[in-house]
Image 1: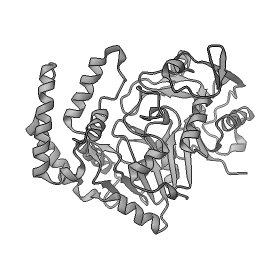
Image 2 (image 1 turned 135 degrees about the vertical axis):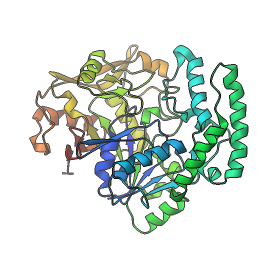
Image 3 (image 1 turned 180 degrees about the vertical axis):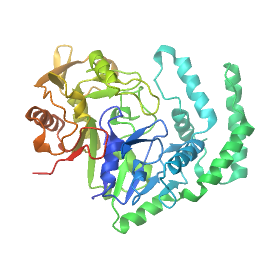
Image 4 (image 1 turned 30 degrees about the horizontal axis):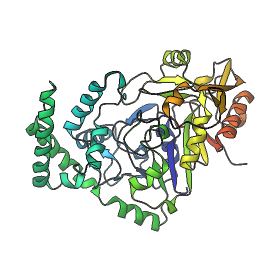
Length: 425
């Protein structure tokens, strides 16, 4: 397989974990480049769900090596628990999981800071997962963050951690919040240090050696394009670059080594948290929630739901250089009489085909729809494109046309085998 970046082309939750798992069969290494355990990728293997937060989804393929790059912010205690959970399910990571020594740490006071900020914002809250991701990236930018290599230098780490924790505890007490128990948290971090130490290395050097030796790399994006700190619906975004460019800086590899960018989209649109959502429809949310779908893998929160927005996906294709699409959850639309596709926006008296950079403008955009006849057929058991109903194929062709990238994979259920690869004609 050529070296490939996989990104979410919506607001996250597009089903990237499953597509990564499918593509991993052909990759030698899978690399996670940004975000933290605010992400949640669910992969079904032999009918059993595996929810991964920090570890690349490729870990579920025994022949593949997984790498957590320098752009990730990681909770060391949470990562230890995630590895232990995999071990209990028979998935061993020894010799198959490497973690960048440059990765910044999410520490206990970051989680309290996250909750404090959200509480203070009231109606203006972002809707974060409260996992401490934003404050950890904030410390990184402010140049007071602690990295995994610091954790391995225990005396130095302890001194810096105590000073930072005491400073933040003063703030917490002033705001009637429980301060961090510094001694207890240090004991937990020491255990995580010892557990993770065998997996820590200079991953940029490791990846360079892999590329030079002809290995195939798959870069696993977390969240989605419209949660990107620069290109998303700011301020309702995450704290890292979730686009293809972020994969390069977050892994420490050159963009010249990339051959393809795959964008993952649902056959409709979902969003968790606050922010504008032009195609949102409450009846679609009721429909999917009634099916037991569209609950966050990380938080369990109900996702907001709407029709597929190709103004978004076209913009995502432009920003990321997407040349192939993986469309997931088509089966969620199987019972619809009519399926709608947003092809443009109406902003005041103008019709526009681009994504506004001002979220106040985006909030008042009205979608312009093209309607398609529903296929009214259970697609979950279909394994070949030619067996899909003609109406479903027409809908997929329209997605490719309006997005500007070919549909190469189609998912019609959570299992590995419920994936159709569409060959290039």
